[in-house]
Image (cartoon, rainbow, N blue to C red; front, side):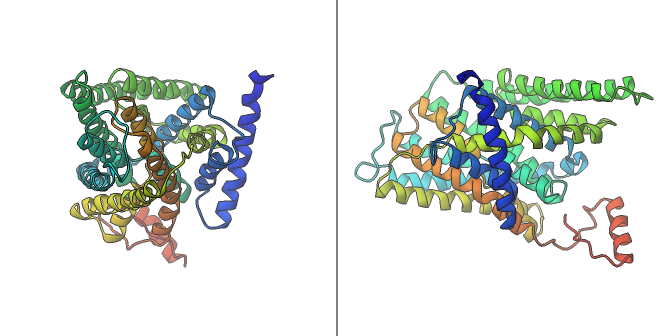
Length: 423
């Protein structure tokens, strides 16, 4: 009978994420907050009703892959190209500022008599690694929230997406550098070469797929369901190759696959199909699984104080760092704040980074609890803060609003409606 336990677990997860999602919606919060709370309540941190099994973990991994695939398909690639340089600057400063902030907090607490560490590496490397953990960004939380709010295709939404993808790359580089200092078998030059190789590979695959699909599918409207199969296969293959061959996050591969599909003539049809799959099954499992991972260890007063300060620093450094980068790239004040808030969530990314650091002696057990709290708090408050900062639309920016949208706005104005204009 135990072999069928996953059916009951999935039913409980789907129902609880929906119920709590509706509850949070009643309180004017995004439904993704409810899904995150459902996993937290059901998991070992509160009730302990459900434990994360390998099957739940693997299903959740497919869930975040499909989520990022859908985000890629719904991304305005022309706007993403225009924000490419800005996204890099936003991501770069959004990595540097949290790195410095995390190191500074760890410097004052990670010492004998304050918080004792059982990590095997030098204290300097341990402090640097806590900074590296704070550089992480869980783009999946922001993506789901932006989709729910209908703001994924705004100028701010595109900047968050682009910066978060680049943030993942910079995070990989930062993690590789710090682990190479603790483990001499890691070669930073090889890692950088692999990252460049992945984007070259993705560009070639994208060119072949777009040209091939448009040529083969010309004047063929029958058998549209077949395109769902090859599109999903492309998503999974690019995710696999990114992670196993090039050492890039699988969600980056999924997002690139979505961008490739967005350049084909059937992107709208495919996006609609995968949205249903994601909403009805995969996304609830993924968001609940984040809460299922959380186990709160016992902590003394010093560790609790460190946790509180680390959480505050984690939030402020992303808002200030990414917001400053956005201002440098001539984004308006309200857009800069939105971009900064959209990069706050650390989510499962920080947990993965922390686990890798623990394996090579960069993170002591006393510091794992504060990292878990950072993940919980930033994951839950990001959708809430995004809802707040996106609640009021900013002034129109004709230089970034597509011409067709301008015509739609004018039409609504003539009909007496007052549309919210957001870029």
